[in-house]
Image (cartoon, rainbow, N blue to C red; front, side, top):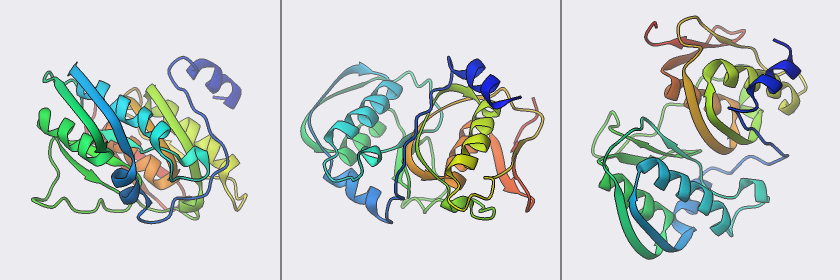
Length: 231
């Protein structure tokens, strides 16, 4: 599919914006989740999806420590959804990480702060201290290709992969043509929602693969997204 045709057909489901940005330093997210303070948080029977969206968007307004502005706020990834339990909270002067923790507890989720995002999930593999997420595979200089902003709303994994493939060519600092990304048959129509900032391409692909039920790997020439379960 040609690039202009892809953008035209996907614009209703997929919203992407990007500007130039420097890569976040290690440990920056751990500082952000402690230093971004919510003066007031009031939820009444909110879903976890609504709570996460509020925290994510509001964190950008309250982030006074990030430079440049495009890196402001905290990326939050919600694994799974559709939980029926609701959240009611009334907090004052609460650090972002505490707001996340209280919301997660209300609906029986766990959370952990990874390098590029706060992740909420039903369960992490190890307890009681969640391990650091294993790094995604790096193909060539893919870890130097930084996506300043990624915002998907119900985009298929095939649409997301096409965007990553095309945009990697623009963002490749070495101007080596970006990376190849192949979605294997069996799950190309799975839809994902993501809202991330200042994140290297391998980590973007890892989150997209995780949410869509795919395995991310590389054959040395291309990134491969292989469905874990055939349709």
